[in-house]
Image 1 (cartoon, rainbow, N blue to C red):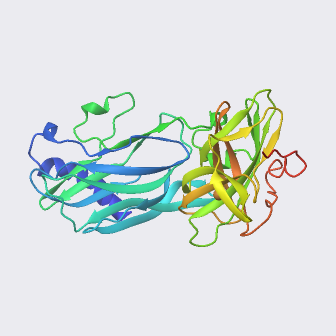
Image 2: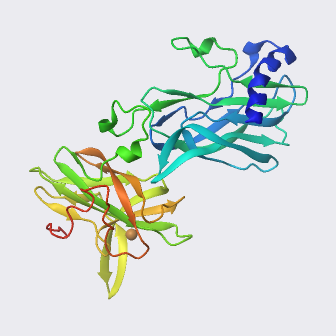
Image 3: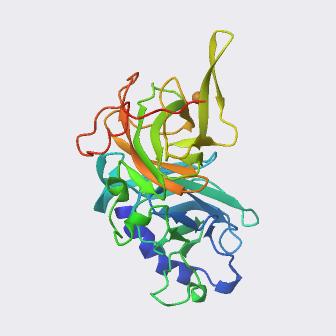
Length: 345
Ligand SMILES: [Cu+2]
């Protein structure tokens, strides 16, 4: 917390130390200035120059409340430090309660020449903010004889373009979760249902197994029921902890079990239920980051050709489990399994 005090105090010092016209600065900014609530967000800070002809030696960012599980990217030639502190609120992250974490990141002992451009990256999670919420990431460049503090935040209704040194701002976009309207400030993963219906489709029994340590891929399973009178297709989806999502099919070829991506999405025929299971159709998650452990539930977002996006909580069973672990808190979580008809080509 001491560093944070220093950083905010530096904002006033900067004006005194630097005498060049403020308008001449190109702002420090975020490469991607918008992210949905309850999503993983990679904050890429673009630093277009040093301070008034001097090289930047230190770059410091204070993370906004509600941006959690932050992991800064180390940079060659720079020393990376983080400050951990209690959050103002408690958040739910993959089934755990989180009330403290990284609140400030500092890259120091480097040298970014005034004539050069560089980027600094922090990955983290945007929690359940209402769409339109503005999250300032206050940033300070420190040089040999002074600093430039990008820490100004526009008053409600004021134009941030009028600020000489605006803090880079992330705007929270509308997520895929229409059922969360009015829950601003709540941590939504706890509110995502285990079973969800959108249009004619009902998605239930989403589960996966805890991947072995170091695994880069994992299967995931779900049951989809189509109550309508026309087919739909599962085209893709996302989970917060994997880079890629594919729908796969297991096949016996010359006595060898192989798997391949289903071309054009997996059909969910009218009036039927398709169960993705180990050994059958499955979701293949690739490029695993922090994969979840058994016993927790994580959000799974599926994209269908007609029904659009459906999000449910996916339970995580122990390594090697053949079936999902019943979830005590979600009466619907274990519904729709083996008793339903299963469609396979
Ligand atoms: Cu596969």
